[in-house]
Image (cartoon, rainbow, N blue to C red):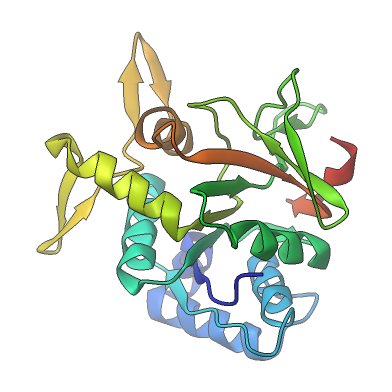
Length: 243
């Protein structure tokens, strides 16, 4: 099990209500005393922190990003710059159960470049919930923590609600992106990689998450779905063992 992961999240809605500085302070307060009223992301981070007494979770909370692709690119940059052996990104409205947290840390402890995605239901205007990632018809699974990791085909991905990425994967992604100057981005004078920049291709608009997996993750990086525990998004639970 990996014992250190750089954790990032964005609290745009809370910052709009309280202001950026106050929103970040509120997240810190909730982490000190989590409750049922805390943000789902806070409850997830708290679960991660209780898995082992020596676990380290340096935390970056973005309270100002109105453009999600920019926020995710900044988060990747800070996680990579930290030198941490893994990055875990959590959306503020997503919670997972303790067994999902344990399995995530287990899956990231690997020299093989890996990205671990957690499926969840996305919000929709109709009554039919939709998954945020594809489930392959031909299944290539490996067992982990009583459940499994399901491999996705190259260039496939999904929603970034609860995602883990090990250092080996980050190195592969950075090396590939630096070969293309189109990804160079100067943010407040600091050079970063615009890894989550949205793309228009053949008349289709690809969002930041799909653009990342489709064009910025090299085929040498394994992308897998975490099928352990339960994810809860917008109050709607998904039993990951059932997928």
